[in-house]
Length: 149
Image 1 (cartoon, rainbow, N blue to C red):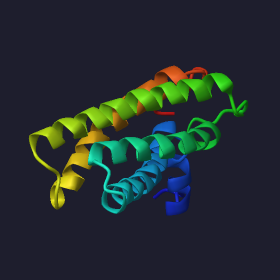
Image 2: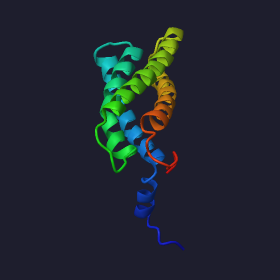
Image 3: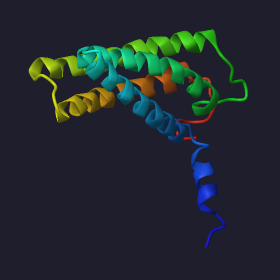
Image 4: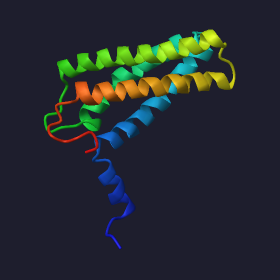
């Protein structure tokens, strides 16, 4: 038997940047989805435009979550270099998301469940782009710790 309680296990998992990134991303994704749907349904924007606006707004706010929690270091603090780098990553990842959703919209008008399917397809592509660029370019000065630590 081990002395690990569920709380200790969760705390141990949250010491890993990959797990923290996943948790922060789930929170950001929920907010992103709500904002996207609001812009799409309430303002009548196209799904690709709504997704792009929501992604950039939520992504910019989550720079601070990544700086102070996800990829935290002893020297964590607002960094102009990382903030600008994060904006570049957001624009790149946002472009990927919008391009995927736009291509799907061109194929078939999003309605009903297709709105969510298109959003998920865009998210999958932008999530991967965002993680790789943030982890290995923007927040790379983690020291010797690898991506899973």
